[in-house]
Image (tube, rainbow, N blue to C red; front, side):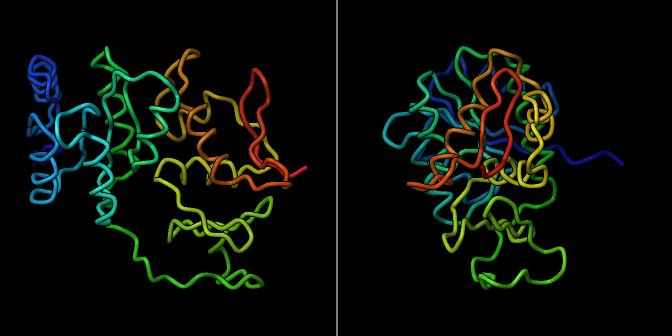
Length: 246
């Protein structure tokens, strides 16, 4: 029995890019809805709940970041891939801060878009629904049910609820940030090389020139680190990253 095609909502105001990407995605087997502005994208996302969104950052009136923020504020967990011509790290961080899961920099190779979409859809799988927000916070001195929490370097994670605390402070993480931190916590004290992290988190190694991992590590550090406290995610130059508290 044939599988139902996965649905993509594409929002791109450049007609040539929109048409080319719509054709490429359709040939790849996706069911694509393509729109030219953020307002229409937001309305379609609320109505049809696609499997994944591809949003251009720079669109008139309502841009991709605003669409992303609005959906996340409503609790919509649909994975979002941003398309951006902005190459500065601060611009990419703005997209992650808005709730995006990944980004592709223009001009892009369509095969890279395919790879990132496959990785996003693998990670989300059938888990299309938001985690309830009223789950109880674990008491500071309780480890909860056996095996529920992961603990390392002063961090406590609840993978089932997708929540994490440093001491008493709960951290607000995007899906990708949480999965990256969970990988580091489960391998606390072990140096993970770049290729391993890319494979486990994105399902694809974007090569030595990619800054994708460095951007996510930097953003995680901004949320994790505290004044006067040791940095938890440490760089092992030329190799990768390790979670440890010296």
